[in-house]
Each structure stands twice: as structure tokens, then as C-alpha cells.
Image 1 (cartoon, helix red, strand yellow):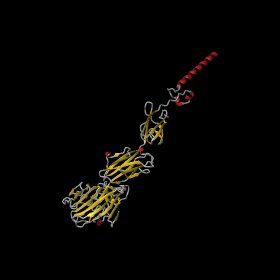
Image 2: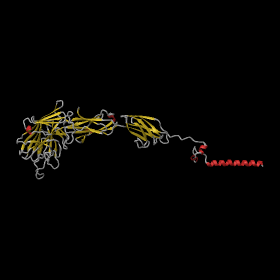
Image 3: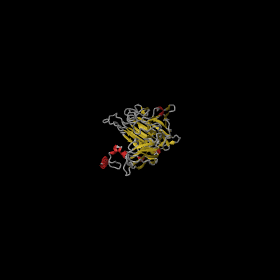
Image 4: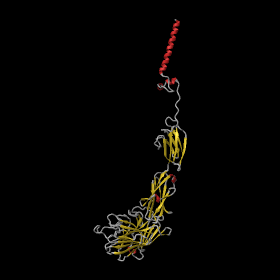
Length: 530
């Protein structure tokens, strides 16, 4: 932050980024040069509290006031700070880190750890009643092109102490002042317990609870009020001290809308595939991020944009990054979005026809976060092995040749994703032409050597070739050589069937018959000789 006392100029400048964008991520207690974010509290992610560290009381109480300039990613937000004395006098102001004291909501219960000194806190001097106001006037926003911006931002005015014990704090603007939030933690008195008037008008008045001593005690702190004015040219916070010992603290912030998109890679089609995601408002790119190497996720971080409470449009998109191997047709995309932590219904999302982008309304105070999950679109191939009557056959082996290489497939074994016998399925296939041939036939069946071809594509990822029929193997021919049969002991014992041999008993009977005939013949010859 730069400041020149001689000129009375307070310079609050952020790092310049893409037009209309605070480029660094906006997490809890994130800091920009000139404003910062707190942890917790309504719209904590979208309110950048103005750091008043260089506030100068002498310059602010002068007729010219002190000049403030805030560079929001190329958009120049400027104003004049004046501390105006009240009807009953004034209390000097000092830039103070939050919390201003132990009972304050700001810094204790909400907007914790805001960097810098964002509160202007009264010093004690015994003055009570109307002690004046702090005004930001001549507010203007200029686009990087030099054109005047008249919408798309809000100024926040907040109680940074505790308004009670007859204190009054008022919020005024030349545009309607809305109550952004009443923060009332347990154990504290209600915010504006003595009355709250003017919501939606140009002046909102919050009167503190006078303290019910019998129930709460005189020192019980009260809750806090936050108000907003959209695209104003003037805002002011008035202070009225209920007692001469009271002190009050205030804070100003600028509220934007945040947009963030992230990529989740559930699986890659090819190892070299890379992606880029982009968040944009209208034609203005807010932020982008790309994967590299084996990244499975990437995020743009929060990008801040000027958005109207009437609703602007934020668009979140994805594309294949240059240098990748595959286009997005090889992936399924699933989008999910949240607004201020709550899921955005599908009816509030517009999805592009090709599924590569979604858009939704975004207003001041919104923090919209979208994520796209990509899953590779691999193909599958199925077929079955049956006999001639349709019965499933087990034990077949196959070779599948194509863009995924040569894949050996075994029924209910290697590469087979189908647990049923005789049914085969191979998944994870790259797109292209494949040839399938049987390499091992089911036991007792003839090998089917026919080659089947199929194409896997984005239009036909899951191919089914149907059933392939195997026929029974023919039985071996009958063997008739006696010597070969007699030389095979295992087959001698066989009986019946076309390939069996004579039983031993038959052979024995035949041998006995031949022997008897020979003996009889010999006897006949002997008788004749005698």
C-alpha cells in the first residue's frame, strides 16, 4: 500500500490480473494488496475488507478528505474518505486490526483473521451523542478500456464493534441500503435490539439494546449488522455514542462474485491426454488451468468478478489441451456446481449441447464453484461359445487383434470379464477395427478357425458378436489288425463296440477243436497201416 501525506492520497492497489478479476485464490483470510478476506461469516468468500492501515485522521477531516484508489484487476475503484463531525462533536478514528475488542462479533465470531487494519475505531474522549460520520463519496469504477462502470459491485458497511447500551449506528447511501446479515451468536444480545428501521431505503438505522441489566448484565455485547449498497456513488456510516465512555468501530468492504472451476480426471483414454478448464463472465475470461503429466485434478482457484445483483452469467468450460492425444469425444463429462456451498439444481444450470460447458446466473455475493469429471470412453466386445443345440461350452481360447494390441482371451480366465461359462467379454478397448479368432477349442470339439471382424467407435462402444457354434470332433476309425490288437493288453480286455476283439474263450475253443481233429485223423491212418 502506498500513501503520500503531502497529497492526502490513500492508495489501495491489488495485483492487476485479467480485466475485472482479482487473480489470486480467495481462501479464508486471503489478502490482496489493499483489501483482504476473513474466515467464516456471511459471504466471507466474496467480501474484500478495505485495509485502512494508511488512514490519516488529519487528511480525512480536512475539507478535501483523503483519496482512496483500489485497483481490482484493472478496474479502478476510487472514492474520497471524509470524517465529518457530528452535532455533538466527534471522536477521533484510528485504523485498528480486528477484533477491536473481545466482545466484538467481527474478528471473534465472523470474518476471522482479516489481514491489515480494516476497522476504524473511535478513541475515547468523553464525547457522547452524535459524534459524526465516515463517508466514502465520489465512488467511481472505471473499466480497463477507460469506460465508466455503473453496475456490478456492492459496497459493504459493517459494525466492527458492538452497538448496544443506547448506541446508534446508521448506514446511508445514494442507492438502496439492504440488510446483508444480522449476526447474532449465542451469548450475545440481539443486533439492533433497540430497533432496526429503513431496510431497502437510503438510510438504515440500528439502535443498540439498552441492556437488560436484570437478565444480561450491563456489559453484555450485542450481535453485528452488515449492510450493502449496490453500485453506489456515496456511502456513509453515522455514529451516535450512547454514553461518554462508549466507543464504536466500523468497516467498509467491496463485495464481488467469485467463480472457480476444477477438473477431475477419473481415467485417461491415452496417457498423454491433457485438459484445460476455463471460467468466464460474458466474453471475459476470468481464469483457466490445465493438467499436465499424470495430473488427476486441477483448479483455477477463485476468480473475482464484477457482477450485478440482477444477475450476470458465468460460464465454465473444458477443452482438450494442446499436445494431448485425444479429443473430448473420447470422454464422458459430468458437471456439478455449488453456489455458496449449496448444490445448484440442474434446472439452474444450462448445459451446452456437446456437454463441454455449463453456465449459470451469478450475482454479487455469490461464490460459484463448478467441477467437471472426465471418464474415458473405452469399448467392450462380447461373444459366446455354444454347441449345435445352443448349450454353453467352456474352455475356449481366443486372440483379439486391434488398436489395443494382441489380447489373449481365455473363457473365465485371462482378459475375460464375463463370469458365465461360455460367455466372454473384453473391456477397456481403444476405438478402431478388431479381428477375433478362436485359438483353443472346447474339449471334444472342432476348432473354429474363422476370423470375425468388428469396429469399436464412439457411436458403437459396446459391440456384441453373438454366439459361435462348435461341432463335436469325429471318433477315430476302427482298428482290425489282430497282431496289433493282441499286442495291446489294455484293448484286449475291451468288450463290445465296433473296435473290440474276440474273447480269449472263443480262441481257446477253436484251438481245442482243431487239436481233436488232428488226433482223430492220425488214429485213422494208423489203423489202415495195421
